[in-house]
Length: 358
Image 1 (cartoon, rainbow, N blue to C red):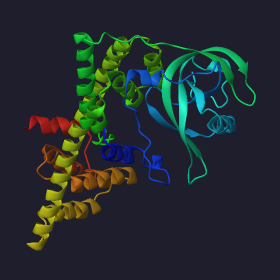
Image 2 (cartoon, helix red, strand yellow):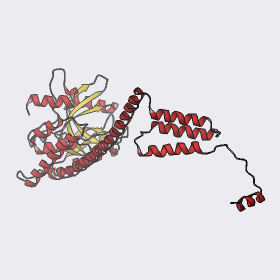
Image 3 (tube, one colour):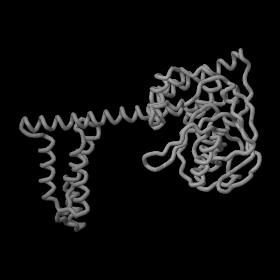
Image 4 (cartoon, helix red, strand yellow):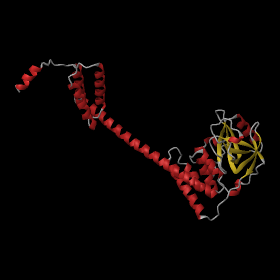
């Protein structure tokens, strides 16, 4: 990847990765497999706990450092060999995790850059180098120091059609996710297309795909690169299904909303035109209902119901099927003899006489 192309991708995703001299810190160092194994890991290294992310070998990750112990750890490591062990917390909500609260498998990382942000926070740019497993806690003051062991990864055969098919599918699915997910910049596809090393590519997608931290941890713990890529395929298929369903629902809701807005606007325009031509028949009809209601001897409760139903009629589109039903209901309320009584003769003899003469 040429420097100009790398600059475009990095500035879009991580503009803070530019230092004062304009150097670019790569999001992933695409190179040979041996590049990740060259780093010599001391037997004892400081261990940095990560809340909401997992660092993969080859991936360069900007990590915001907030806890005092973590800040001291990063600064001490940056002044020495820049090597740290990064391990995800089992519970990301835990503020001060103990050694037992960390996953046993993590990644040895090398601090590439330490940035003091404008808001006073500290961001460490760390590149994952190789997987490791925590062996033994040496000290937890002022921060975790532990013995670690490297975890070699099983590489697929150089000419494996099965592995090539997995990598090709990962590229296709990743590009599809970038296309249908509005929250991902289209420029992200540039990195997917230009990472030539398959191991780096799989780790890059593992790091950047939108899955749970626990699922990323499961991917990191898989020793076989081929199996890690296959498991990643399942996660990407699920992510695409969720995105397609969300987009379908949003499109349907938007379509329904647009139709309602269109009908409302047309109705308002029709009312305006009718007023310009000499009055709106609907307004006159509603006004007649109000005047007729003034002569009714109904209770306050009945009056409140009538006003509510009349307001509902006023808001309805005359072209709607429910409009005529609402009009009939209003007219029925007005036709009922509220509070009006007749003088009836309840004498049975009179009733008998009336019936005989019929």
